[in-house]
Image 1 (cartoon, rainbow, N blue to C red):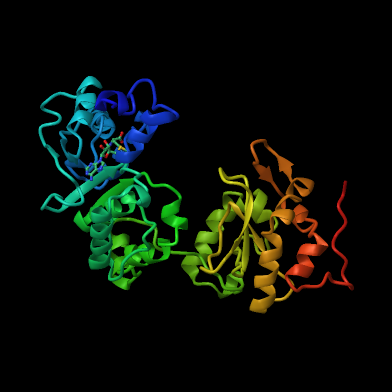
Image 2 (image 1 turned 180 degrees about the horizontal axis):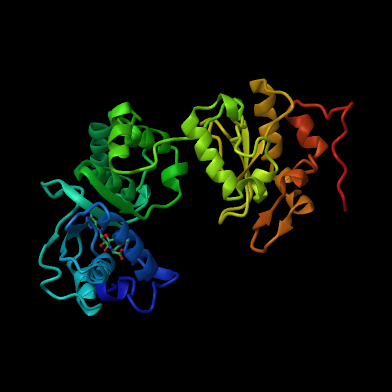
Length: 374
Ligand SMILES: C[S@@+](CC[C@H](N)C(=O)[O-])C[C@H]1O[C@@H](n2cnc3c(N)ncnc32)[C@H](O)[C@@H]1O
């Protein structure tokens, strides 16, 4: 049997990549946060003015060490508190340079079952990524009930322990408090993600009172929206603002030079399909059911027809593996499956005729697909 010391991800050497040691790490989600990441997260939560940093899963104390470094830089006194389920992990925290005094307010406890009883102003966490199939039946039942009691409905059973850590932390966050969590992509893409985020953003309406509060704090609350009006039709203060921009030479700058008038805002229709590229995951088409308008990072795909049946069938065609396999023909490969495709090139993506037929579509006879510029 492995001892805890061997099983835990080493602070200095990095975690084992495979085998029983890796499996032991996984069962408790014991992977340590790099210091530079921890410092950025701590700096963020402290900007809200908190004097205590709380880590629900202390482990080898990456966030405590980061908090000490940040507090020293800012010249502030900071208290450290947290929970950790595994006493052996705190041994690693000591080895990594934390003192008994630094760890005095760490309770050996389960953050989910035995949480703190006071509101927390600054929470930082790299929660345990324990996947749902590693949870005991009893724990599975408990998280289901907990999720339902908090959000109003049970989350899909595939949500891992990290999701419930986030829920518990949000429940304990003080009004106006700040929270920084490291979370995997499934939190946005998992089957349960819709329910999770609906609950997270409930009550986050933009109200006139909220705008007043932000204005009082000196935050930007105005959006320039000329709505097709000529400069003469705009209020005097707005005209003066635009004059200032002209004096600063903004109309000659790259993007604004191509707009008429130069201060016109781009207004984009919701694209029914998005194309994600140059990310860590492979290039892919996404059916935009959420109706988002991307600012950057995605290409917008506007089909020639907008009826839902056509869009659904087209999405089947573009996301078919045989179509995706054609992407290198129109994009630039950066290795490891990473491809960059320019908007004009994406229009030339060859759609395999068999895939088009299978989706019940016909290749357009009038407008032929654009020829590949090989
Ligand atoms: C991903 S590690 C992160 C540790 C450290 N905060 C860091 O960022 O390096 C997660 C830690 O959570 C602890 N843990 C697992 N389940 C827990 C629970 N239910 N309550 C509190 N801590 C838990 C594990 O022992 C592990 O030390």
